[in-house]
Length: 434
Image (cartoon, rainbow, N blue to C red; front, side, top):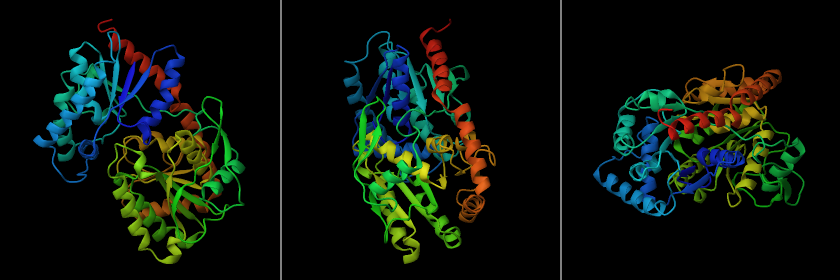
């Protein structure tokens, strides 16, 4: 079983594969993970498709003949490499638009193809129609099964008997989710520079394979003055620097509707922008957020940090995120659109109260008022701020939401559930008509 995607680190797809591959190999299935190669123009095109599938214009440019030509040239180079790797009896799972153009080659050589789309919106508009028009010819004649996070994300030309719905899951034993004491979380955040604390050396942690590791790299932090005190309530959003994650909107919602009435600080954290190859917008989004941060008043800037987390060691990065989520008073995910949003499940599993947008797959995770709080209009900053304040002002509500979120994460979003669904799908694809 060969999984193919567009980046080895950064973003939900890479994280899901890091979870599922070891479990699949543990079930005595020869599972592999390949990453395609692209160039900036290719990833600009696929990022445009990504935005279109979310119903957004993205960079506003077209998906025309020049884009088709360039996309196909990159796909040819990658299928040339793949031809020396796949053999009869393999099955290939292609992830997202970046890999869709490989389906024809695989089908032509008799390899069953599953296409897994991790993004989408419940309805359609001119942008989604444009994206599906681009992708359809690469998929429809060649794909044996389609996997979406929600059935509503699938276009109407996907055959119902080939459509499968599998929600993502998290690994509770991974460095990002394993148990961590409050003391260790504070020590890690103090060392990397996110919260104030006594000087300390690198902090040890246990890697996924049981070997020792150390948090020894620092975060790149944009801030005014010292880091927040370790006992200050922290509002945290961890995500890629993507316009649909609306980091700047979170900042303005916090500054305009939360900051003056509380002692809370805000941390907006994402990966170092050079570390995610398939996200050419990251540097632009970070720079735009920084420019808006610079325009804040001095006392407002002193309560907001923009943090780029180190990515040289993926498990070190995961441990820092773990510490940040566990230390948070509130975990935010105010996305404008979201295919699923693994950070929501991660925070729920850690027993943290979550404030998130009622968009896409987030609504499948959070039962409003039971396992988190949903913001119905993510562009309404007053609604967002009021929802955050509800938790900050009511410790019992925070505890109740955290407990409800943990129960829901355990019941619905751990790997045993999704692995069983994948087993059924793969058996059906490998034994058609059985």
